[in-house]
Length: 328
Image (cartoon, rainbow, N blue to C red; front, top):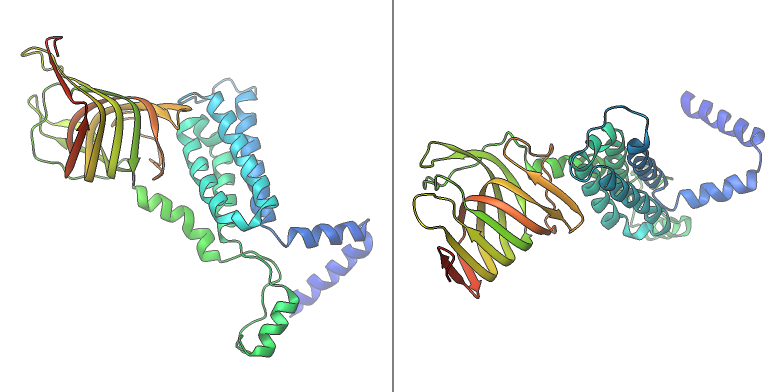
């Protein structure tokens, strides 16, 4: 009670001291009807990602497209902050996309603005996702008169801060769902070829794409360290596979499209491509992004991978062609 009374006195004193009381009241009323602080944190995080490549630092960590990635992700986070202010009803959708971009910024450019921009983006996304609208006074009075609200419950919160559990749990759930690079994945037990074949495709569109981790699988020359990618299904356009065994003629397998369905698992020693056709990245078992985040709706273009093994319940190929020694 003492702290509440003291806070009330300070608030009254500030109201009398600060100028423009009508404008401040209008701003306060506007701010309480939207996730204002979440949008502000996203704007600050995006601005920090934009400014880091322009800073006079002598050493910058540049992964992927470096400055271009910082420009794209920074502008996207700032746009997400503005969307939270202008369209608060879409705060769930905007916050989830902003969270994914914030985490991807670690691997895409300068360690997420040396963790500052990434941290601001994650915090703003979590606050935006957990925000709830302010209850209108007339609506609250009607609910009370109808007996819908228990009289023993505390009064409705004045600010739309939302559930703290949602705000804290959203980034934690994302990290827990995708795992980490040190996580071990089960191997198939089937020996891999001595030299993994090269796979190229112009479009790789997975469903439920997750990075399971790193493991070792048996190969002709001993254990082979591979990345493990798991998904429900995947579609590959202009599929091209070329072997590198060295013990016989070079074999090629081409298809206009390839569809994998049901518990698809890829074992790769190298994976490169352009995320959403914009951000080009290369991953190996020793250089995975930390944390390894792959959204479920992502697609990649101009993909090239070294594929040690692949398992799937069903494989459907359109326009399948086999080449041996340069002949189809």
